[in-house]
Amino acid sequence: MSDKEKTSDTDNLTLKDFMPDVSKGYMAIAGTKLEGKSDKADEIQIIDALMEVKDPEIPVNIYDLGLIYSIERHYGGDVDITMSLTAPGCPVAGEMPGQVAEKVAELDNVGLVQVTLVWDPPWAPERMSEDAKLALDYGF
Image (tube, rainbow, N blue to C red; front, top):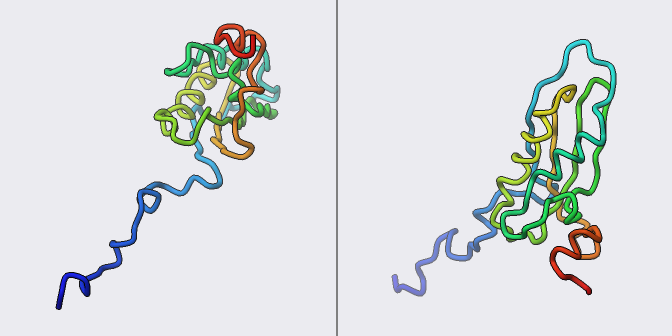
């Protein structure tokens, strides 16, 4: 059998075939359910915590960068956050959701925190706050 005739199932694989399927988002969970709590977590405290998380490649926090798409606070202190990154190839894609979940879970009166990383809609610079645009000299 010649080399041309020798093929295997792995001959046509690409890098994508070795990556986890995150088409529906990547999820990170931190914290624990709070017993006996009936209130929602404070939104301002959550935003303040998110503003402490910085993108390692851009000197601006993830909230002002517009990477946080939604914050859903539930009775009992649980929080669901949907976020994106500036690009799918971002080197912190596997770490950032966990960092966000841990940071928010550190807050008093916050129970279970679930962070979902999504790529749709894709992040765009227009999502940045005016402060972020000014810090990055974007559009001025």
